[in-house]
Length: 413
Image 1 (cartoon, rainbow, N blue to C red):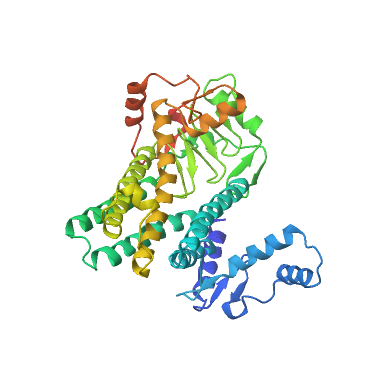
Image 2: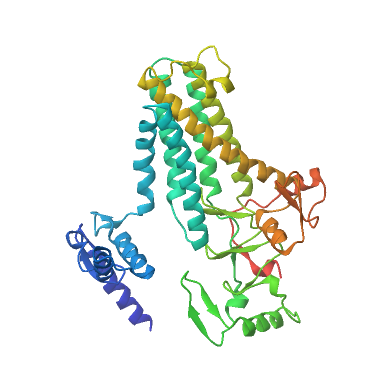
């Protein structure tokens, strides 16, 4: 068996090494060429024929056509063409175009800056229902940071409107924000099966779409319970997908396909779960982003709307549309204000949840099962289960584990 596996891996590596820069292995495991990327797609032909002949096509046909097109969207590279995630493209193209068009007139600014959040919220609900991963939100967040910083330097610093002090504060804030973004994208506290439980042979198994192995959970639960001297494992402490015992407050993420210790939620903006190990970095990320964004907005408004208060300048800035340079900077300020307000709401909910020692996942479950009550105008859900007072709750949060080692279920059985 070992020799066959080695020969198979060697043949696969030779097969991949033989690809030219414009060739790739498609989703069917066949060699294909970029010049023929639009050919030989029966689903695309069927969908187009139905559209031309005004015949309704099944949603599965369009879904397969989109999946095939996404698989063939590649760029030439050494040892074969590399796949490019299509969700990375819209922010890179649409954001600069929309902001430049919005800077032409105030009515265009109102329409575009109102439509952008609506489109983002709509796409979020669409991906949330499908429980699928996407890089669109992460690429939008990163490109927004980079593009707003570039605009700030171009319009404010290079034109000598601000000094080195403001430039240094904004630059340091951006670097620290990116640093904590990297830290927040690390392991949130994924649970793995122990060596004892993995040695148990299941009666039957099959492979799931997310790559995890599913077995007869009832039989395995009994075997694991007997292994650790337990009579039975409660249903709420057992994950049928990961086939392991979940510790208290942990949860299974259907997007990541894994169980996370003290899971809070899956954040689409960083494309990662928020759990025990990275929750503190996530809060620091939000705080640094708020400080840097508000500071940049304040400095920019003071330069383009001189003599006015910050809140007044956001709503009324005479002569700002007289020059395209100032109108574009004003449009970017409003874009930053909208994003900052949205992130401020997320930060507020996070701080309130920490103060009451509840996670977003626990709040959703409490509302669904009607075991919690809304307080503070509905901003937070209090179950009273883990709430030990404001100071004790924050001490508990600040003392969460921050090491990078993965958790073993033998530690929590």
